Image (cartoon, rainbow over all chains, first blue to last red; front, side, top):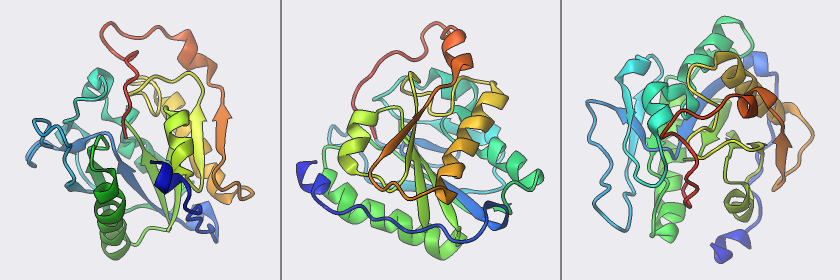
Amino acid sequence: MAQISRRCVPFTPFEGELGAATVALVTAGGVHRKDQPPFNIADDLGDLTFRVIAGDVDAAELMVTHHHYDHADADRDINVQFPIERLRELAADKVIAAVASEHVGFMGYTMQLRKMYEETAPAIADHIDQHARPDAVVLTGG
Amino acid sequence: MSTVLITVSPEASRQMRPPRALYPRGFNLGNALGRPFMRDLQRRVLLDALGLLAGPPRPGEIVEREYPEYLAEPAASGAAGRREPSG
């Protein structure tokens, strides 16, 4: 953690208007579709994989696998961690231009911080950038 | 891509020095956007986060906002409260 905190802030300016922006969600809260493999909570080192979630997913088809925070509230309403329905409403109200075609869930808990930072995080960023082409990404933790 | 983080663990997030971050003050782990079915609150938190994109650059700074309706609503039994390190 100390090593990472010494790095500079990877700041990408936001250009243009929110009303013209396509927005994606990336959550460390262990969100995935019920028909996707759950995150491996049996591994004490954590799970470095991620799940791609389509922008038109039915919120009722989403669930949480994460054992390092109490996700009882997200189990009732996934929007407390992964606000896909709120994002759709903002698009419908033309506050943003569109909901991205793909979003990502992963399990933020890890004892392999270096791998998470150097492998998983860039892989998520590459996937989102290449497949969803969003103008902005909203990140949520656990 | 421009990013904005919504965090309920500001101390942990500060160490990662995110380019933009919102901390809804007093929100529990597992409640990044607020409580279940509080749609107006969830929308406002999301809008405030998106608002940081267009605001003045404050890289590494975590912006704190108050949402009194969250604090006014008691947590459902069994939900929230535990504060373990997380992502």
